[in-house]
Length: 125
Image 1 (tube, rainbow, N blue to C red):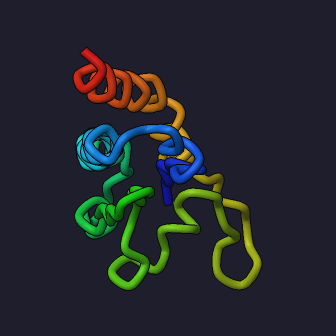
Image 2 (cartoon, rainbow, N blue to C red):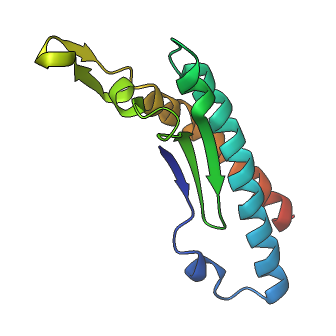
Image 3 (cartoon, rainbow, N blue to C red):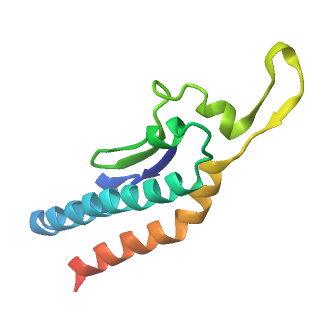
């Protein structure tokens, strides 16, 4: 699961007027939604496909300070094995992990920062 978090929001908002706080919170909310959508698209393109079940299980959950992006383990309970690797049944050979979630997080970080920067700068101007 990929997590995009806005930490210490109360500290960030101290010293701003109520109107400014409202604008900042809206910019953060918009940024989390846009970032989650972008990362979900990237995650789907990086997800290995066998049956397509793992790829279609990818989802987002966004609240006021965090966006979570990743596979629904109720739909694809084997997602962790695909990400990190596993032994074949009976303790046989090791199947290496695909690290598709980690790769997506690293590839998406710059774009997520750009999204936040764009939305916050829009309210400052």
